[in-house]
Image (cartoon, rainbow over all chains, first blue to last red; front, side, top):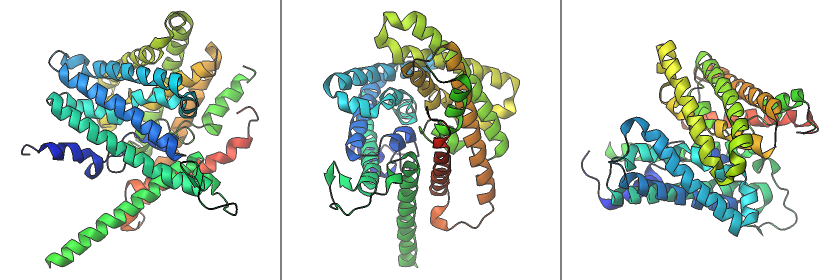
Length: 208
Length: 193
């Protein structure tokens, strides 16, 4: 693999290798708290902050972290940032903190964050790691909002709390309940697969 | 605190199933649910780690954290991570085959949300020692149940003629959604849950 350009590093995680939609990482928050768009954005921002902060620290101190205890070190760094987020949210937006509940603390065990540390930040320069973390974090926010939008519109007939359909709308309640998380992501993947395969078919026809 | 121990066990197992209701432990749920035998072993490993977690969380909650509440997340994860490391070394030594089968998901059992989730939920619910223990065993059995159910269905769909766009994860997620819907039927089982 030749050296990717800076923008490739940044945009890799946003869409082409989107953590949730392509790699199926960080599913726990992506399914659990995405019953409204607001919760999705909050969770996405919190994760972005934790990911960027820990990528910065890990890539800065990569020479001093012994190989044998690297995972533990990464988790400690991540847990520190999660504690910061947890306490800041509790202080500034208690309502949001309550809505996200235990899932804020569970950012620690988001496979996506640890995965980026192990696969990227521990090997690359600080600048690259920062770009990679920002890209992946934004990709995560995009995926969460995609989920949250579907579930909020179908499940409560609103978007960001604004009612869309008037009084006659019968909410599809199951979408805001746990099964809706699985179904919404499943349908998104169906749609994305259909789109990718159609594009491949078109490309093949064009080449023939 | 009025829940009976049995109620806690059943509640954690089917009513508020960790995987299908709280979305915890999804990585192994998606990753190693291809074969029933592997799913059972992964479930067993989870029950073991969850029980250890519950005990250590109780110890931390009672003797360490009252003095330093801001260390909650960090101390939970460090204690759990070292525990999992021990289990990992034991499995590697005792059964290299199993170690190979579980592949990348064994190191990631540390970042299995179910483990930390259990510690946090147990703290939030203010469970005592035995309540926590039963909660952990129930949660572990629930995880195993979900994994085995999923694996059984996937062994069948492997041979089925699935439309091209639904192959892979999309199908797994929709099956998981249906399972989760089915598990919602248990909601009326316990009034306290």
